[in-house]
Image (cartoon, helix red, strand yellow):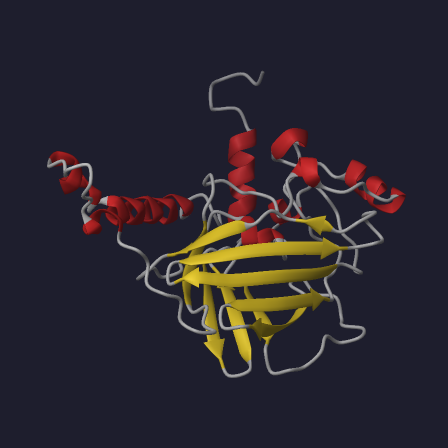
Length: 270
């Protein structure tokens, strides 16, 4: 089971980190300060962002459950090609959830990009000359963003995580363009498809030492009548965190699915 035994410690670490981050406020509540004076320790401002540096472990600030690049209500109209694909999908989550879903991740296929960006699990940015590497706890996958000045290939071979190139805009924003995705993944847990023509633009802005603002635009004329623009998301740095190992192991995934679908021993199936 790639996620069942390990997500709880991951979320637990995040909760502990949040509690530690807010703990300096407790003394101020026990010993109220005059209205005109506030303890500087109660809300210490984050340090400035280092220049052109995303290094660190980060996690999406959200509800603690999987989210979508673009909320379902904000998705643009689908083309007839995409609608056929969408109607054939059987999600296991969200507004269209049902039994015996065909979500690719339930088959131990890679979750793909950009969906992996919206999981409630950490990722790490690692920078080396000429590239930025994203390493994801989910599935132990990685993605390379080339920053050595190269252009996107004209006809890249389709892959799960595409081909990405980036450049710095000022000292705080990495602008990324990517293409070359296969069409075997979904954009969201509810089954929104995409084609191999999908192009993704990202703006990754490090606001300060602890905060990244993330914006995504998905352009896929074969699937949607206009670009899908995601809302701005926030990623928070997790100092000292280390990524766990969460590969998908089909034998374990299949065993888990079998256990939860079979009635408990001695109880008739409903």
